[in-house]
Image (cartoon, rainbow, N blue to C red; front, side):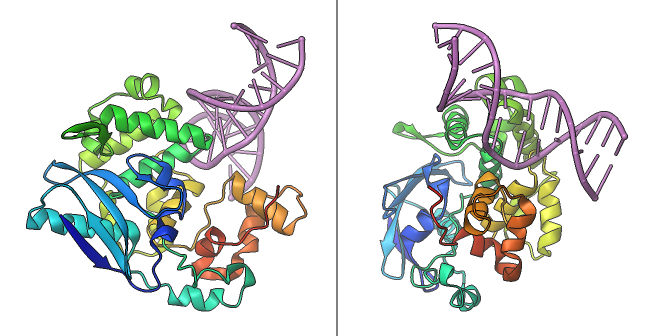
Length: 293
DNA sequence: GGTAGACCTGGACGC
DNA sequence: GCGTCCAGGTCTACC
């Protein structure tokens, strides 16, 4: 089956795909230039399918070798629309960005969208896996999770969907620690999966929540393993850019950009983008940094 | 509210 | 090849 979805202009498929490191994390597959994005997904029915997305005019082409019934097609449409944030209007951000040379590129390059996973559960788990480790460690832990707990694609077991909360919840801390190699994050991931499975935490509700960003941030911070950086990263994924995901990279870049390489803390990163208000996170994310090397 | 130390792993480095 | 050190955010205990 194949169909197309129209995006709110301006839209650049590669810009979304390459908006951050998520594209390197299973079940995502892509190419260097981001001209296609493939991933294996488990639908609500439990069925596992593989999808390939490519640019198509002012939107995206969705392709799968599988036939989809109307309900499945509806779910895939919603999933892809969410992942690529195709309906979002960035005109207010672009209007402000036009006055800043370091962001002069954002409108012409259709920057602003941040690649999302099919579910917020997947994005929360992946975000926790980015904390306190090198990027290689993040990729390794995520690969282990997918390979050990993800449902395989019928006919090609090398492709697996991201694990459901139920699949992880059925595991235990020792397995996650010693086999999946999640280290001290194991109890955090297990607790998250069990809270979602038990219905105590409805993460997916946050995707459409209208509550103010500071309140939403508090809810995210209540998840074990999610601190200031992780919460801000998740808010960015949720389309809220009021906070900056300040990590060591952010401090390094701000240090080089404005402090002549002298060490800086989170306060200086905040101060650097204080004037961007609700667009603070996007201004930081798409800033045209001087190369510190 | 602020701070110190622990958490876990892999990579870099010195021997 | 082995041992040591360090980087990377968050949590908890303590002040």
